[in-house]
Image (cartoon, rainbow, N blue to C red; front, side, top):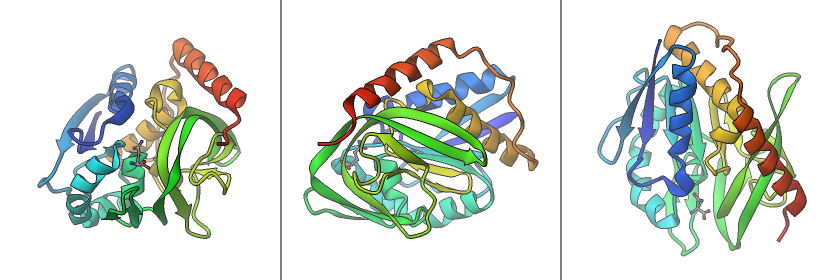
Length: 250
Ligand code: GLN
């Protein structure tokens, strides 16, 4: 199969090597005989529902976020229609913030958001920095650990009843208080975890790939053939241990 990926603002939002997540999708798709076709979507480009099986947006500093936010809001109808139609989506940090209702940045910049995710973000005085460990349950009964690195001033408050990506085992998470991290809306996932996220969490890469394949085929998410993932498991273990050792408070 061909998996069509739309990469939003690769030229603006790519902090902490977030584009490494695309390399992971590409390789893991190829090892299962699928081809990833990645199209950059930047300022002035439109998003049409149905054109992408997976949308991806990375993180950035407030400055880059402010540069893309007005344009991103113009893409809101296309992004919302795409996700409603079963397109998978991964949003990291700055992109995660901008897919909510809005972000009030550290220097008072009020950035409008897409409104796909049920949250709002306001920057606080102290940055929340360090390794993070989460417990996630994207499929009922299947608990998985997610490890990564966070560095954000934004405090993201989920609306009551919103589904978080995971529960914080160590680290700050959405706001340093709620005990939750990230958000999930159907096949769309938002998170603060960088590092990049997917090389050390291949199970999430495969979950997203399977959702993207389901969109491509119009069927159910396929069972993907397991890969050895020895280095990935080591990277995960190191990252998870660092998070546990640190605890995750100021
Ligand atoms: N600029 C945002 C914040 O500080 C996002 C940072 C990031 O993408 N790492 O909260």
